[in-house]
Image (tube, rainbow, N blue to C red; front, top):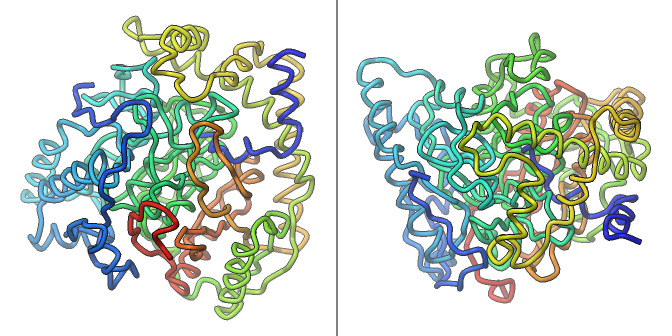
Length: 568
């Protein structure tokens, strides 16, 4: 049996790969370190606004991190501070750059940011001048935001998916996401670390590891994993290295790291946010989405990202769906009268997570929600194998198409050239695990082949029409709810990830929205709750998620403890 056959057999059931964070897929100050995890420095933490955030001031003091002036502040608070003259956009940008300098490669060595934007302060100055001239463009004006390092920017930062194979690569134009954020007045602060190639390289990968960025760390307990593939985006937001960040998801890549790092993550309906200019994995499942400390912050950012883009045909379906903003749907009483189905099949993998889940259901009932339990999408165990086949085919086709448009200066022009580069540069590209997924994808043919077409039809039908749609129609549900996943595992570069559970798959395969919100803690590790539902149901899900957040207020700032032992 070939290596490829062995690998393919491992994915005929709902394996750990479904939760590995399939994400869509320079002149800057380079702040990534060596490929391996760096030595642990003296642990540090954020004590800013501890009374508001629920973080432990004592733990922060013991960890030795100075209080951060912007710690846990919302986008509204930052915007109001700029309007009243407390800060300028330059002040905010400088403060976040200082925070990155202090915590990314020093102190807790989060390795959440690969590079910062050398033009960030200049951009902030221009936005300050515009505000003085009365030209404030919206709620993101002057707000520093990080982008995952697969989201293209045509500036002095590079876009590499964490791989040395694309070192120095600057796309010929901004991605649609970057362009919309600039138009909304955001300061693009830099690029966040990620699981290399959106965690689609090896069956034994460690989430949050990339050759360029090293191993990203969970800010709550540093030897724990941040999940992936939008690892750096989640770790950075939770640790207050930026006001917010943008991640990408194919299956779990926004919701898993958001859950593991105690923040809010939105995986929108595929087609609501353009994917043009993003290093792809799967054109049927990829999407970018906001990652923030509150539902309102995430909703504010989502509103700036939506819109039809001729460069991404999937967005044509959103022509009557983009609403220009989502904050009007945020209602603290938004759970009252809702019908929420419990996707019970996605629980039961951890007794303490189950306890938090039952507490969350009780909180929703107390807020007036009607809980239908159980309400499991059908064919749960049949989705994984066809999804895996689709991703292998689409990764090769979509990545080759992306690389071909980079122009003659592109360091690599195909998946095959990436594989060859990794073999030549194995010491720095593959010190911990290999590239067997890349090899499997390279073996696939064109998207006209029958196995691909059959797998695509099967996967989408099982997840959508016969899955989420069927169960929601049967019980007249507004949303489905499940634990997002289990507590973060100890990072293991030798053996790879150790997932306990996940609920990301049905919404990911169907291309439907999914929102994760902090739901509590297990031994100091955050656990998230996922609300997912029909296509284009972002307004309903945001209303429910916001009401749950306001009723429970589970978010706490991280303490940057070195290991679980130190919490006892």
